[in-house]
Image 1 (cartoon, one colour):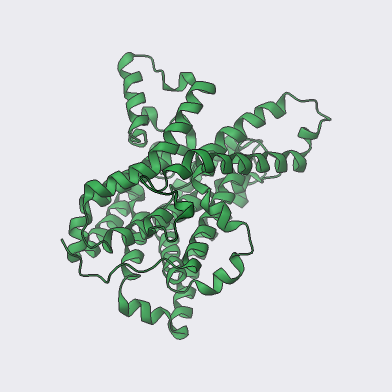
Image 2: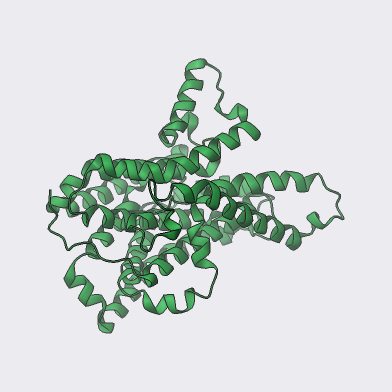
Length: 405
């Protein structure tokens, strides 16, 4: 069916730099968070819960980019859409999964019964383990976000026909209201339903705000309005206010509890229970942060030149290009180097806080680039040259897998 929206818009260098940099920054912050979770003392315990922020932004970003890809296609074919997404996501993921299972965690896929073992293996091969309590963490704990990202692709493939028939606003409104209703039913006893974002239905409002922003970015009237200073400044102030309120509610709680617990895991348990008890935070934190992020993404896409002028001189665009490989491999590198650190003498270089921290961080990014070059890059443009050599990648290629924990 032919879309009524404007034809595909070129992906400018400024847009690519801006969105690569955003992904690179959030991925970097998440790596730091996981280093704190693994016991690196230079990361404050309160900061380890910024993963809620990173995940919310990445899912909103994914909704924005994938929606643009779906709506601006002249003819949308769900099967071809899923094939492209699978070709982009699965090869690097399966290589990483095989490596992890063979070298580090062969027992993670083995359960007490044969049926459970087969179910575990099947859920990992199909990226559906995020829907099952027994397999929720996966072989690598951060991979639950990849399972939810794949669920979002399936959702878009099914609903794209209605979205392209101007039912997009009804669908996204239903997603937001449905997520709020589900989160309102969450109690401290069922905390993993929403606070840890294990249930896709409880976080679908994050994708919904990204979908709305992606659709708005294709409307000529919005494009023209955002170019006006008297429009974009109040818009950014509203977005900053919403995101700022959400971040304040989140970090004020985390910082108020910092120092009360010996390690991350005790802090995590107490923070999670307290966060759920605060119903306003539980209900409105996600939509406020997602709405603020969506406004920022809309402005960044339509007015990227200012940010790109200085981003090109930073490592952030490079970090964004390899962010999917960073997401796939960083946890195993951090966890195993941490184990090696514990076996070294107390007076060794490893045991010094900052030198050991910087060494592990450098190793994460060095190996991520290696994995990107050999395991990810060859699959970025199946059937042709790697996307690194393409003059202009499709917008959906910007939609890397999200990063989360």
